[in-house]
Image (tube, rainbow over all chains, first blue to last red; front, side, top):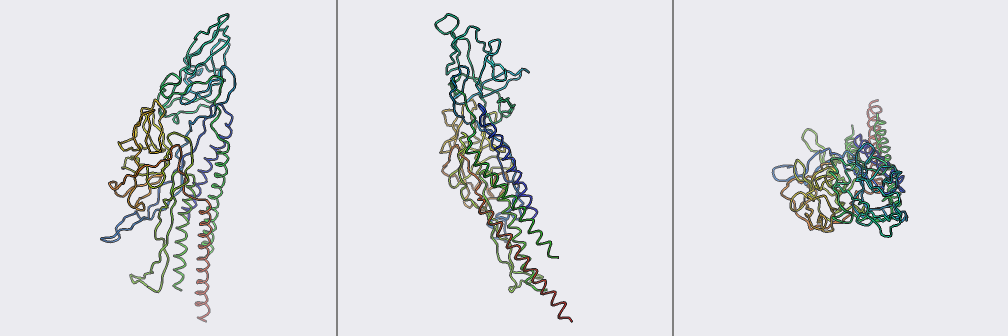
Length: 261
Length: 238
């Protein structure tokens, strides 16, 4: 009976973790470029009372074993890098990546960070920076007298300067990709950093070799689907309740036993 | 003492064991690819000093058999998630040999190796599945693993002749009792989806109620025998 109680308690813990993940996903439903996280759960080791196919006598063996499970554990959380929807903003410096890849930014500490959030701005020095003021890496500076800014699907940035009638190319935005994006470490602020699990960044031209093309005037919305999360929320709450009922019932059964003087 | 008392105690013990299994099933209601267990009981003859007593029959847990019914398949959209339709298991390599799993929540390592959530290499028909990792990898409906626009490997999907001989190892893994006995299965994979646990909360709760009531009933029976024995020893002796 205590095994049952512990298994149910581990079940409640797993549902709690799941609830935390759902809450954070829902909180970020309007965060540009946010990628939802899901929990991965697995059964614990089994108490093997009798292994399958153990010989009972010289010739026959038991066809099945007797293994009692001990509950569940959370093995990890997995970030889902599926595409969010693209939302047209009309802002010339909003860029969405249509497919695989990340923008590379330099943090004030010199560390490199990666993001799918393409809501860029221009700072006082004319550099292209993200909403927190971190500049693109390699840096891209727009001339002071730039008028129209065009960002092509392949990442080339051209501007029309002063009295010119034809645009001039001022730089190029490259994208970084990772063998295992799920292994990136989130830094908050829509930023990620490379880890040994994600591998080193591989650079390339947008729209080539499996990297997504750039879409100017668009932002990628969060890939959290409210309906899906709400269904998970209900399922999680019910599963939590069910596991707590198991503990309650086990408690009542133990009470019945102890009442037998 | 009445002999029936032992039958009632055996009954309560068996119900308690079954309860532990149902409790583990419900704890794993969110584990991808989890297969619940079913408990069956058997009648045993009580024995006393090696003499079996055919008059006195009791109950015991006979088998705990995994229920290999398909769990619901839910779309995730992740390119490396795969669910198997019908019979078969993914094969992963562990330090102790090949193991089977129904959990297809795969990821890549930084070197482009396909791994299970526990970090175990996933095996294809030509060894561990390996992609270059610099272009998007995905799994298709025939279990092929695409590395950009070329097929890198095909997921090895296998089963054993009698699935009830598989041992559970936890962590969604099953151990075949004879590694040579793996039978290849024609892959039928739902790409971008995961198989959910095949535990139904409704069924689990019903079992919990039934088992705890049965357990209580055995206690009532124990109580009745106890009262009867008490009467025998207290009243008849007077």
